[in-house]
Image (cartoon, rainbow, N blue to C red; front, top):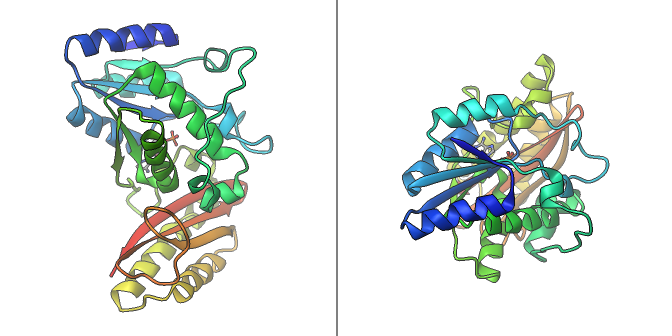
Length: 281
Ligand code: AMP
C-alpha cells in the first residue's frame, strides 16, 4: 500500500489506473478506523479493481464548539489495518493541502442539508459536500462507498453527484454494529464505561420502534414518542432529535406507509451519537 499526501500525485495515480482500464473504488473516512469502515473497504474491493481510502479529519464540517481538535487520530494503526485489507492507496492529505491559503469556494446541497443533523450542526453538510467534491476531484473514482450510519450524508452525496454530474456511482453500505447493538463509530472511543452502557439506548429505542411497526403501529407520533420514552429512561442520555422521515427526500412523515427512515441523535455526556433504522411495514 502506498501513502499519497498530495492531490496532484493522487490525480496522476488515478489517471494511470484509468488508462489501464482499472476501476477505482473509493472509501472516504476521517480515520480512527473500526469494523464499520473496514466493512466498507471490503465492499469496495468487490466493486473495483483498486481501492483508495482517504483519511482526512475535515475541519470545515466541525463548528467551532465541536470536537475537531479532540477527534481521535491514529494513522499508524489505520495504515496497518488498511494494509491488511489489500488497499492500494491511503490518501492522507494535510489540511493545508486541501485548504490552502486563500481558499474560498463552497459546495452546498441546499434543501436536503437542512433536515435532521443539518438542523443541529450549522454548516456541517456544506463542509461535507465541499470536502467530498475535492476528494472526488483528487481520487477520480468510478464508485464511492458511504455508510448508512450517516444516512443523511449518503442522500446528500447522492444528490451532489447527480446535480454536479460527477460520473461516480454512489454506493451505500448497511450499518455495522457491536455485538450488543451499538452502531460502530470513531466517537465511541470518547465514552466512559458507564456512558458506553448508556449509549445502548439509541439502538434499543430503534429496535423498540421497529417492533412496534411489526406489531401494526404506523403512527409517527406514537413511534417517536416511544423512542423519547426509551431514551429518557437513561439518565446519562439527552435526546437531540428523533424524526420519522421519507427515505429519499428526508422530509418528515406522519406515518410509516411503505417504508420510512427513523433517525435520532443523542448526547451521552459530551459525546454526540447518531443512529437510524429503515422501518418497513
Ligand atoms: P467517518 O470516518 O465517521 O467519517 O466515516 C467514514 C465512512 O464510514 C462514512 O461513509 C460512514 O457512514 C461510514 N461508517 C462509519 N461508521 C459506520 C458503521 N458503523 N457502519 C457502516 N458505515 C459506517
